[in-house]
Image (cartoon, rainbow, N blue to C red; front, side, top):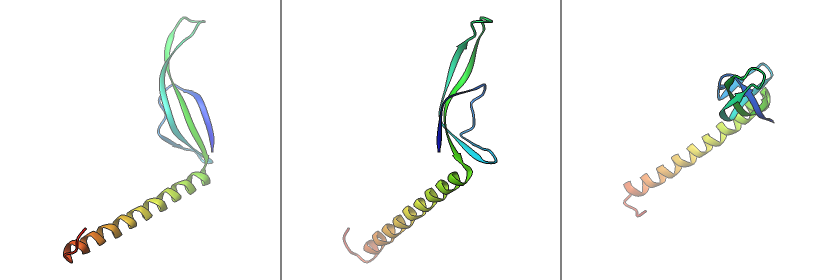
Length: 93
């Protein structure tokens, strides 16, 4: 992963932008006013920080997060089943 700081955009980028070989994940975005000394004009730009992943690296991170969430759900289901058994079986919590 590569961190890209202070990237300037005319419009706020999407939270996730997928390219053929990389994926950009928006970390932060701040609307800033820029003054052009040459023309005297003021305009707004989005100053952003992005995390850039290679496509395979991003997919691996998604898979790991998915696996972690599945494990948490399974643990929660087991805990709920144990509480249910205590309640139905007349046991104490």
